[in-house]
Structure formats: C-alpha cells, structure tokens
Amino acid sequence: MTAELTRPDVLDQVPDDLDADLVTVVVPARNERDAIRHCLASIQSQDHPELEILVVDGDSTDGTVDVVRELAAADPRIRLLHNPDRVIPVSLNLALRAATGRWLVRVDAHAAIPPGYVRRAVQHLSTGRWGGVGGRKDGVGVTPAGRAIAAVMASRFGVGGSIYHYGSNVQTVEHVPFGAYPVEEARRLGGWDESLRVNQDFEFDYRVRASGRELLFDPDLVIDWQCRQSVPDLYRQYLRYGRGKVVVALLHPGSVRPRHLAAPALVAWLAAAAAMLPLRPAAAGAMVAPYALAVAGASVRTATGLQGRREKAWVPASFVAMHLGWGAGFWLGLGGRAADAVRGARQGRPRG
Image 1 (cartoon, rainbow, N blue to C red):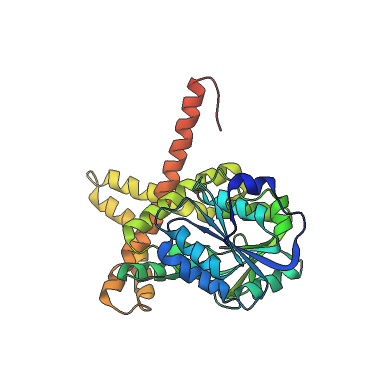
Image 2: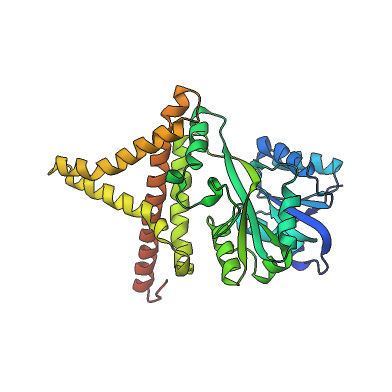
C-alpha cells in the first residue's frame, strides 16, 4: 500500500526520532511521467541499503502519480506526498518534515545517480564536518540543441563560477546542486524559503554557511541531469534564474559576488551599443566585438567535444542565451522590485 501524505498531515506530524542508519531521498516532481521511472530506478539501485524514498508530487496532470503509485506498490521504501502548491521549496519542506532518516539527499525527477552516490554522500556527512555535500551536475542532451546546451553548461565561459558544472577536485564551495544534508540541521535552519520560486537551493546553502558550516563539492558524486533541449527554453530558464537572483540578493546582500553581476553588466553594455548603432555604427561594432570574439573562441573549444554539425551549430546561440537570459532577468527583477517600491510608496506603505 502506498503511503500518501498531504501537507497538513505532515505539518502536524513531524517525526521526533530519526533512524541513524536511514537516508531519506527526496524527489520533488511535477509532470515528470517520462523521467520519474528512470530517476527512481537509479535511487532503488543504490548500494546503501537503508533508504526511504519520498516523492513529493506538485499536482501533476500527466500521470506522474500513477507511475509513482505503481512503483511504490512493489517497493515499500517509496512513499508519495502531495503538494498542491506546486512550489519546489514547499515540496522540500514537506519531505523534510516527514523524513525519518538522519540524512536527507535531494534528487530531482529529471536526474539519475550512480549506485554509490548515497553511500559516498553519507560517508562525507558522517564525519560531522560538513553542513552539506554535493557533486557534479552533468547535463544530458537528447536533441542536437540539447547536446550543445549540455556542453555549454560544462564550460567555465558558460556558467562562470558554478564549480559543480565542471569541477574536478574535492573542495569547499558556496553552493552544491541537489545537496545532501543532516536532517536535524536542515530543520534547525527552518528548511527552504517557500517564498522563492527559484534560487531557493542557493539561498538555503547561504544560510548553511552563515550558520558556520561548510559545503563540500565532490566530483565523484555525479548527477546525470536532463538539461533544456532547445535554446528558447534555455533562455527562459536563465531569465527566471536572473530574476530570482535579485530576490536572494536583496534578502542576503552578502551573498552577491562580482561574477553575479557580469551578465547584467554585459546586457547593459550591449544595450548601450544598440542605442549607439544608428549614430555611430563603427563605435557600436567595436563595443560588441570583444564579446563576439569571446563567444566565438569559447564555441570552438566547446564544440570539439560534439560530434555532428547540427550540435556544433547550436553552441554559440546557447552561450548567448545563457548570458543574455540571466542578465536580462536580473534587470527585469530589479525593475519589478523598483515598481513594487513605487506602488507601495504611493499607497503609503513602503516596501523593500
């Protein structure tokens, strides 16, 4: 029988005693029918024997729940939780409250992990040194554009300081993808901020570090993650990331690094070049040229790992979509916050 929980039930029944040997693997999912079976199979195949697998469904409409129920009927380790709010941090907090394991490992529904993933993450956490542990997120493309995007996301020129996309050495970092955490500490920090639609994982990691704990990146913890499969989807993804970064930056100004401002600065620079183009085309071209040359050089290097012409052809557009999407989203986020402040001032209630 599948154990299915709704949000009120979980909020009212937080387990007091944690099983020291048990690991709670959390899978937030919404409309992931085509991916959820492969994801759960990779979790079921872990060589760490003591697992509970909490799938938190975000009001799926595509049959995801039916697949999870089918798998849960054959594997009592799988439990299904329901999140009608459709918000990822709400799903994470539902699972955090329902967890009975000592450790929590997040795996997204469109990802898969190798058999030793949970065991290695728990080995690190068991030392007591780390507030969180994560690994390398390797993009998986299934279309020509998707394979180009996966290659671009493994490029330092594409993702900047996001070490988890390309890092090869064990090291402390600011943020880990799909992190593993001690359940008690995650609860003590209040879980994930449910007001954040994106960047909630980065914001949570910032609070982990602010509490005095360190985050460990281990490249042997490999996550196969199905990235976006078209350039327009990639642009929209990074547009959301940029907008979400503004909210986190306002919550935690100390989390902002110069590299976070590179894409917004690029967008402002290119906008200035566009404005100058009708009057001084040569000067406008000179302003754009350094970035165009950088994209060309990075594209040549990145395309060497791809096979066909169609894949290689998508590489420059993928770089541009990531940079401009993130930068434009950041400016849109700032504009939205400024508009909120103006409206609040007009109504006599200033807002941050």
